[in-house]
Image 1: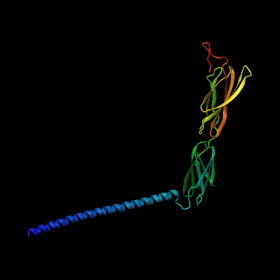
Image 2 (image 1 turned 60 degrees about the horizontal axis):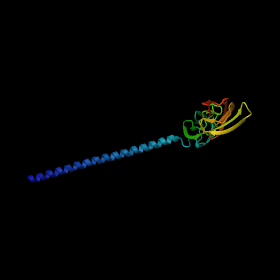
Image 3 (image 1 turned 120 degrees about the vertical axis):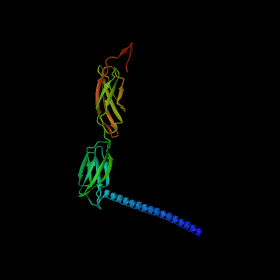
Image 4 (image 1 turned 90 degrees about the vertical axis):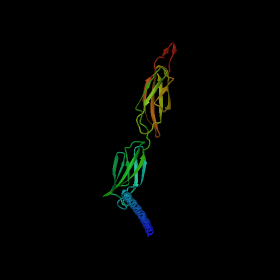
Length: 251
């Protein structure tokens, strides 16, 4: 009798343990399932919200939109911007480049008074009664010939040579070379002449003059668009050669 009760008790305990284990596994399965459903729901909501935001970014009304097929033609100081209207044309457009903003009722505009060799972001907006839709473009203005150098002068003057210096004017375009031309006439004779060269720096040594020679030079700066106007300056070589230790010292 005692043996039967013991067997029955063990059996009941085993059954109870299995039931608890099965119940625990069921609970975890339900939790995992609920978590998966929650993640799917959140992902779906996020996707729907993102789609809505993307749609709102473009247009809240079918047929409306920003300017289409934007094209830009550049010169040194202006940009010509053209575009196609959306299916539903707006009341007007605004076009901005740099500090210039214009209200446009057609589909083209010329933006003037820009700096050469400068990149511009162009903002184009279709303006409707209750919304505005924007698009962007970009362009760089072209090279222009540079202004004349701000100044030029001579230094390190001897009886047969002098050094010509110059200072370029500021410009956005890269100055890559200079054209230097000079002429001379000896003040105590009929001797005269001229010459020309190029130089990438900001000074050049001019040589082989006679004492007491008037030298006039012109300097023009160069960009990819060509040479600009020149700046001129003049000076006179020393009248006598310099002597030191009875040897002529001149450069």
